[in-house]
Image (cartoon, rainbow, N blue to C red; front, side, top):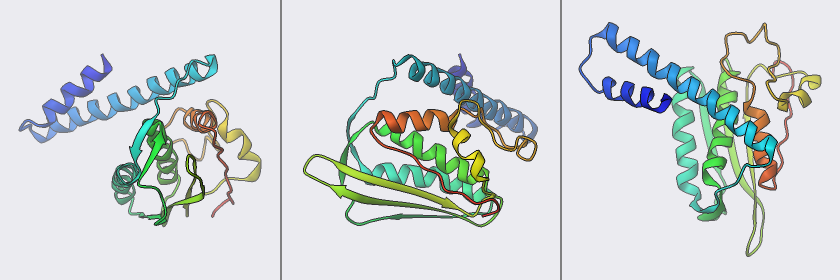
Length: 202
């Protein structure tokens, strides 16, 4: 049903609507996407907790993945007046094997957080190969920003379910608090790890 609401609102937005009507349809579309994101987060956390989450692995083109991520985040960053830079090392394999949908989702989730918590300045996304053999490429994705930062004691709980740091200060920022918990579990399911380094105000 939620996909139907989003789909119908997208169809309506293609029509020649009066400004007030268009604004209302855009609000329906935005709210629908937000609710769908919450539903998907809850479904994912349920699957992960029950051990029923399965990766859908296959070959994917790294350039296509990174361009998808870049274009999605660049739009969000530009809306806030932020500079967004992506640097990919030249030795990244043209094609890799993995669950590209999950990898894309993980990168977008973390980059979206960088956009959310960066009121001004820039976000930088670096991608490099740490090690490569005939069958395995160990990739490193680093996201840094000039955002508000968090205190050291808040880093570990950041990956807990429904965790949101400094709720009063960040009450205007949307989110369920499930994103980073799901992200961490998915990264570890793929045999990777995720780390945070932060300083308040930096």
